[in-house]
Image (cartoon, helix red, strand yellow):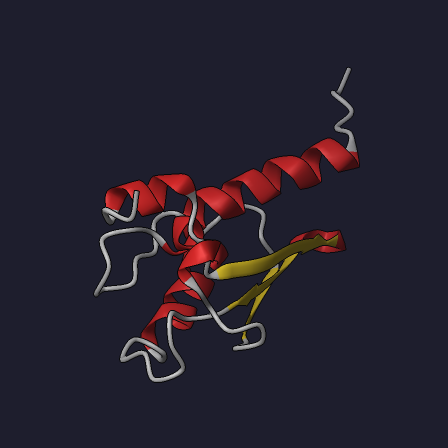
Length: 111
């Protein structure tokens, strides 16, 4: 008898894998991952395992503006079962240090 997988459970599991992958991407100038930095505004897992990520950078003139979104896309495409990935960059709302997690603030000495 084959096991029936709840689609909602499968979507949550994939979202967890997406977050884990995002936590492996770092801004080269800051020793904290982009998820904890608060650079990820939105993560959507659509049917057929298409992933959409809306993210920002610490500044519009960030030297890594070309590198980070590409690295995010690459890491997400490496997740087993992911079909397609779209990473969109936005600067609205502008990034502030308030968007960082407690762990990131602690790591960077802001607490």
